[in-house]
Image (cartoon, rainbow, N blue to C red; front, side, top):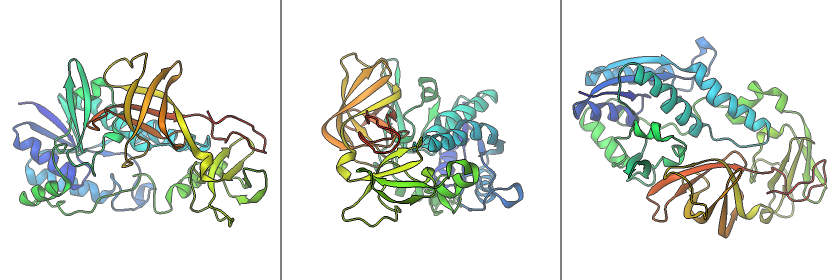
Length: 374
């Protein structure tokens, strides 16, 4: 009987996964990860839907008891801080916009958790992600979920071949409605529980509030400039802004303004019209290509520049530093630090992805820096 470790967050998805894995005859070891201080007694916030909050842990334990499987709480807080949170903070201080959920999957859920699973004799790690894994020759490839609205391959693109080989996604062939229906049929107490949509370590005061506590040095007032050099106002810290942002700028102007540059050297926020952000190419670093070695001539693919964004056509071209995306139809530039996730032309297979890199400044600015975007 194979032993499978199931990551149980306390939500309906992972709860049903534990039940399904048990029903197919595997031995289930349920594990809830403690990733962040989420209760007043240990200095954290008390948002009930945070993935490692006391409420979520109690629900996970109750589900495990109800279906007759073992359940443990494992402390990965230090690894989560080093592998996810510290990088999140440093990226914002550099003027980037990071994606912590991708980093959590690669370093914690299929990193530390898989290491723990192997140490207790488990063959795979099963989670409630909406994704599938398929094998093509000797390679493991991600495949989009049957439920396109819930598909989470965007957040899994950077998993290694070893991680994919030991990943188990029982919900990849189901819709969210079917998951809730199956959970109700089994009287699972989390069947109708609402979903958490936020970053798990961010409290009610949002990303800016979190960064003010964790990195107060990143919040120094500075000028807000128009691309033409005129001073429009004053910001209270660059870490509160991201490339392409329009809302929350508190600037009245004759035309819509967007964040087109973040000058961390001069501590200036640069605003301009949308067309400054339109580009026909993006540079990527740390590129993952699940089929193996990226062809020297490149590959025609579809790319998602944001989760749930419609895929757009591009050609992926290898470079010495990673790769470039060349768009036949120009696109709005993604912020450095964001993920660009690659799919085949049928939008079925997730082929990998990379991290957007490049200058956070527009082609010409009047402050301390003059730089090319690419």
